[in-house]
Amino acid sequence: MTLDEKALDLLFLNARTQNGWLPTPVTDDQLRAIYQIMRSGPTSANSCPARILFVRTPEAKARLIPALSPGNVDKTKAAPVTAIIGYDTRFFELLPKLFPHRPEMKNPYEANAKLAETVAFRADVPGGTIREPVVLTAGPPRGALPTVFRLAPSHPNPFQNMTTIRFELPEARHVSLKVYNVAGQEVCTLAEADYPAGAYDVPWNTRTSNGDLAPNGVYFYKIRAGRFVDAKKMVLVR
Image (cartoon, rainbow, N blue to C red; front, side, top):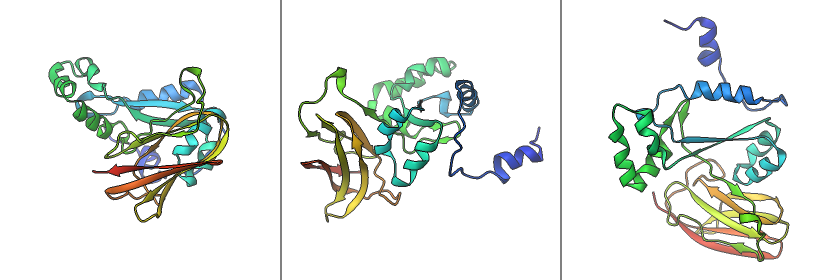
């Protein structure tokens, strides 16, 4: 069986990366149909570490904006739906079901949490490979607002591929969160927006503002939220 010319044109020969979005609603049925097609692709040992969160509302997108590069902010706001792709470090628990002829495949991952996370991060998923998964949480824990301004230590630290920086606001502020190298040069901006009171976890995927991978070394992240200013150190070791 071969693809006809129309299918080849649609999928490969005339396909282009989309750089803008129409304000056309995307229904739940369409998202389910897309997922059903996507999950049919081949993966290593049929593993499925990918986890997808679909974001639609302006309030949810506002929480996502700090994790975006500046050139993607307006595009994300305009898109009818945004997919956040993350990974499940306990993916191996489903291997006896997904790879039933070799249920013991889960054993190496179950015995080695670091190996499981590395494989989940790099695991092939239908349609591509997870290279920069985003894990973003926002809002105060258990409904309690922070009582003081706070910039927390990044976690993990040292780190290899990604670290998460938490800041807490007892009241609304414009927040600027930037990463600098040891020479004091700005590496990237992680947040530059108005935030309501709450606690926010912002990931850094080790990319610079230009999209390049930052080299190994010591970095500093600095927050400005009104009169509150603080900075902390983190170490990137691949």
